[in-house]
Image 1 (spheres, rainbow, N blue to C red):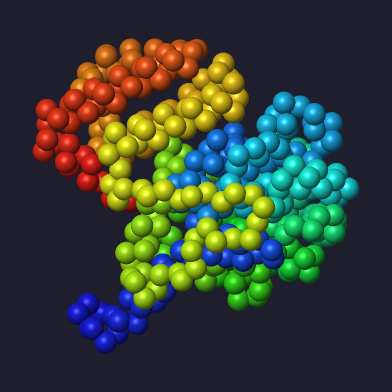
Image 2 (image 1 turned 60 degrees about the vertical axis):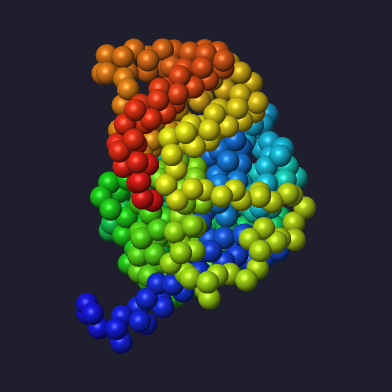
Length: 401
Ligand SMILES: Cc1cc2nc3c(=O)[nH]c(=O)nc-3n(C[C@H](O)[C@H](O)[C@H](O)COP(=O)(O)O)c2cc1C
């Protein structure tokens, strides 16, 4: 009811309280998560460099890429990299995937020995490779096996075990309520749900009624996931579900500052009386917590360029130069796309042919120095173009988050 101050006030208070809730720490057993804006696990994306950057830029928790529980893969370079948490701020959350209770229990132990402070079980990933071996979301069809896996993992480690799942196998078999009940009975400490079924893949919009149903039935802290890309969407999902936290996946690609930008917007909505009283990084853990950096309310291309350079540097150091340069390519693509949507049209100083030529040189670069030099050139030209077009520049940096 527009203009009705009496009925609008409770709604505003509720929104402010929801915003404050997302900024408050969340305690999961012995682990204190500094806020409720989580980075979703994404294979091939949420590696140590990206997690560390997202944490520094405001994510409360950054869940690792999934680590296979198959012991035959344990010594591989991929598995070694996925268990390397050197320099990573806590709480360190590692996701494991597999279908054999004993292997899953062992994988949990190995990862805790390597520094994991939270173990997350993957029951939500529709990746073909996982479903072929009845792991990931394929497990949703075998509830008895789900129970055995969850119990085995919970028994195996003394850190909190969390579960990430979808709403069911298909729209005809949305068995999330039974999975949630099994999780609760097995000693799982937190449940993250992507609001789509396995069969839906990423099609259509995520739905959140299933999560609201779970909230009414299940006492576990609930994390809502699916299509969240703005503070408004986060608040809408929180309102619709009563969830305790939100998880962001694709919207963080090329935009690791989305968490800090979202937190700043939520702080403004929460107002001073709703701000969480405890300091965000005040946590009783062995691993160092990330000092959260300030994120500008409207990141300029220059600021985004500096974050990208830092990301590349972390990739080169973690993977070594040759692989770091290759892995960087997809991230660069995402940053440039984010730059286009955040700050306007990207590098306005290049015509189409020039841009194509520059991009192909960038994607062909095999040395870190060349990759960095091409990007510096890009951001420098962008800054020059912005100086020449002050009005255009100010409108481009005025994007909202
Ligand atoms: C590239 C990519 C890799 C993913 N890998 C995993 C994974 O390893 N484990 C998992 O549980 N979910 C995985 N997911 C699913 C995400 O964690 C998340 O549930 C999904 O993207 C929906 O959230 P969003 O709409 O915010 O992206 C992946 C998603 C993407 C896009």
